[in-house]
Image (cartoon, rainbow, N blue to C red; front, side, top):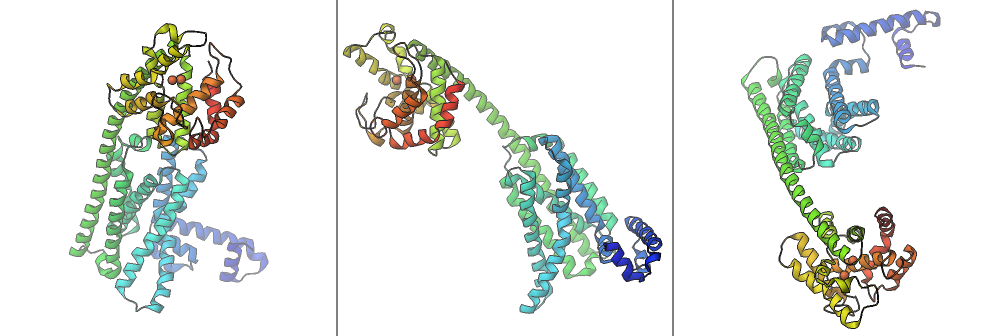
Length: 483
Ligand SMILES: [Fe+2]
Ligand SMILES: [Fe+2]
């Protein structure tokens, strides 16, 4: 039995044959009622028997419009700026999790628990207001979590957007004294916000430089103020009557100031963010230029030693993969990637005939080649900066061995800089698995086994472990940058 049938039997208690006719009448009455509600003519209410659902609708319809507006705006932004799919589903979800909509079940939730609460403690208006604000926060936080899941943006950004809508909705509740004025204020405010932020919308959705966390702390505080102001209406209902009085104006003024403050904060956070985007763009260009020079420089040194430019690229990528696996943060690992390209830069200072000699080197010649580590250290000592300081230690120590039998200093274990430990593994693996003038390329598996075999003797055990765990990525890089 459908809801309507049940209701209709309860209301009119009719015979079966009359059902269809009365059903029609019932539906017609309902349609008229819904239309009437929309025009805010609530006096009709007394003339008909209303279901609980209709009573709810009568009271809450402006909130439903606000929820529709929220759903529309969010879906539109997701479609326009983030090219999201499944829009109808998103629209429906947004509607049900909007702060305007959730305040409806929120009210029931609050009064339900308040009735339980007053059984334990003395009921008072103050307690009621405090409980109202608290439960409001709880409801908002629960649905905010759903919002974060749906919108799939970083949490601070999602929470901030959600709170912004919640604040505007609260402001409307405070300023309005009827359903219609609630809607007019809502539209005016949102129009105002859009106008203020229209040039920044693209930026706000696209970049990561905006300090959403900072904004968020203020927004939480301001939502609390707005909620508390709304609490005043609960304490003294006469403040909210249609007559204009001092208290009403006073509360409205604070609410408007509070919201204005939020708007100013959003605007200034955007400005600040745009500025730091510009700075970061500049830094990135600067770093890219530096990287380009370093790469050319590194390729030169590799070309001189009969290796290809691909060798430095591969070693650099292997190094980064191992470093990230060992817990070095992304930015630092990126510096290391660029720095690792210069590990053999000292070879530029080794005589050409020794470097290019196809036969086995004499002990004297080998001593000269070994000096490329010291030359690298000296060459790079002239400059400063994050990348160069990593490059310098890598150039100096990449032929050191874990067991102390390497060169030039014969350092052992963790006396060797971690970056040099990593570069050593990456460099040897690549030298083994690629073709050189004096040898054929080993099969990747053989090169891999050789590295593992020398764990704890030539190579750092921790670095070899990391090398093994990221070997799949290393293998992909080797395929991608083949000679
Ligand atoms: Fe080297
Ligand atoms: Fe190398």
